[in-house]
Length: 185
Ligand SMILES: Nc1nc2c(ncn2[C@@H]2O[C@H](COP(=O)(O)OP(=O)(O)O)[C@@H](O)[C@H]2O)c(=O)[nH]1
Ligand SMILES: [Mg+2]
Image (cartoon, rainbow, N blue to C red; front, side, top):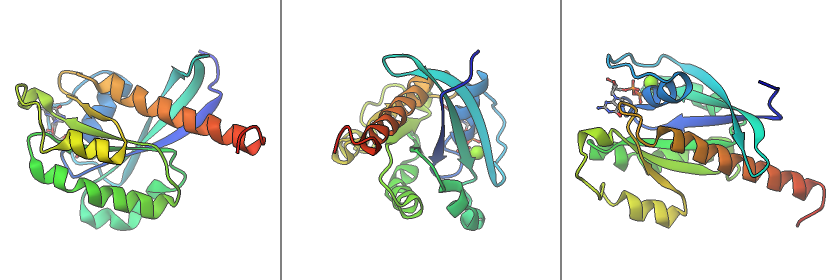
């Protein structure tokens, strides 16, 4: 494969055990790991994908952070330079959805600028008949951000999740380039 034209850092955050690491592994390596292994510190995974109308090759670097509070001191460098954010909760545990505003505040505080983000309700395989997860759809609309219902276990919407944020980030980056060149104000 040829070289990517851009490299984008994208962070994924949310409470412990919502399925962040499983989702990244499903997307970047195509498998699901059943046993629980909590992420220690920061890890990253990447994949080269095509985005935009002209199928530009971009490398998406997904940064994964352990949700545990003891790692709070790592978070400034975790968010540094991020171009996009995935906020994940577990549709079978409402408290993980309740934590989302806190995760958004934390990311905004560290990143400093307004970056595209996307909401993901993971583990839909556990509650397949439910349609309204704690008002998540309304909440996403109020933030003007997409909500994807995913399952790292079955693979449902996982590709869509990462491609969606990839597109948003690429669009934003292209917009910034045009602005820098003075093509748009
Ligand atoms: N049923 C189900 N289990 C999942 C899913 N995603 C993750 N898990 C399980 O949830 C636990 C926590 O997942 P993990 O990816 O380590 O969560 P993280 O702490 O957010 O990185 C593990 O036991 C996974 O196997 C999913 O979509 N469906
Ligand atoms: Mg993890």
